[in-house]
Image (cartoon, rainbow, N blue to C red):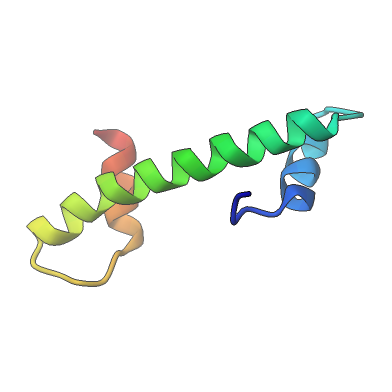
Length: 67
C-alpha cells in the first residue's frame, strides 16, 4: 500500500473531469503518484546536495522539473 491517500487521488481525478474511478484505477494512480514523487525527490536532492544544503527547497524541485 502507498503513503498517498486514495481519497486524495480520487479528488484529483474528479477535479480533472473524471466522474467515476474504479478502486483498481485509484490504487494504480496512488502507486504511480508515489513513484513519481519519489523519483522527483531523488532528482531534486541532487540539486540540494550540489548547493551544499541538507534542506530540500522548492527551487530544487523546480530545477529538477526543468532538467
